[in-house]
Amino acid sequence: MPRVLARANSGSGKCKVGDIDTVAAQLFSLLTPAGKARFIASNKECAASFGTMCSGTDACADALRAVMNCGFAVPSHAFSCEEAQGKQQWILTMINPRPKRLFRDVHDFGRSRAEDLITGTCQTVAAVDIVIIGFSCKDLSHYNIHSPENRDFVASGAGRTGGTLKSALDYIMRCRPRFVFLENVVAMKDVNPKTGLSSDDALRLKMKSIGYLLISCVYDSRCHGSVQRRNRWWGVAVRVSERPISDSELESYQPLQDRMMNYLVRMEMEPGDMDRVLMKEDRLGSDQRKPQQKPKIGHKYPTDTQDR
Image (cartoon, rainbow, N blue to C red; front, side, top):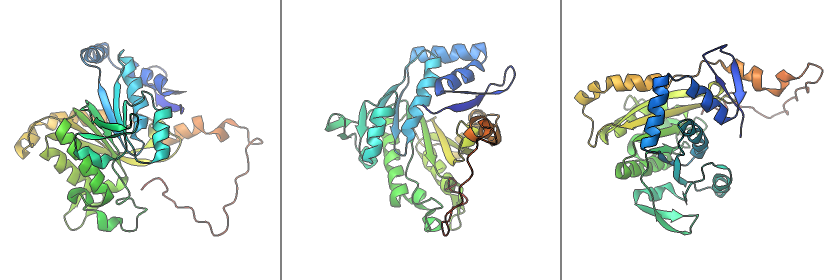
């Protein structure tokens, strides 16, 4: 389990290092007594079920399990979906809780049944309370020289990015999860000059058309438990209606949007805090540090390797 960092704002306010269960317990301790009581009561009423789709979103399973355990509940990992064989093995070996179903192709989610690699048979893609989706980023990524030409793919459903998202939206429309978490690259914020809208805007309109309220932010992983810089776009959508949300209704949901944004606040931590605590070189004396290797001649190192 990777070591992660969190700041406990009560007490000394110093950063603490521990595994994900320790961090979840630290964050749970910051709730008011009434907040803790509501969280535990809601878990008793209904233990959450969840599903994960593509791009390593299964790693969120450990975080969700740790958070739910604080409320004395065990979430059910109903399904995962991954096409790469190496990642499939990683999911079955490393993810806790292990998914009950492992589907191969997210494009099959337009139907109610898909091939399950665990049983070797077609199984129903279960309805869940929470679904976590990492739809393809290849068409939008700044590493793709055609990225500027692909900025309408989220809106149009074209390419691999639009196709995987469309299949995920088909599942959402059919199964109506309460919460949807989405992950992609920061290029989601790039504006399409032809329409004046970004992919983020286009997805917000799509979610609005099926009764979901979507808010989004770009996060730097260094501020949330990692020693590396990895800026990513994250969206959270809440089901608020069984029909499209009108513009007039959208105004009435503004207080809810404000509350959601308050929950998407960064931990009070600077990237340097994490570097000083976790980087091995900072725990060694100057005489113990290994000399930095010079880059090979002709080898180019991209300056924004994680900000795609």
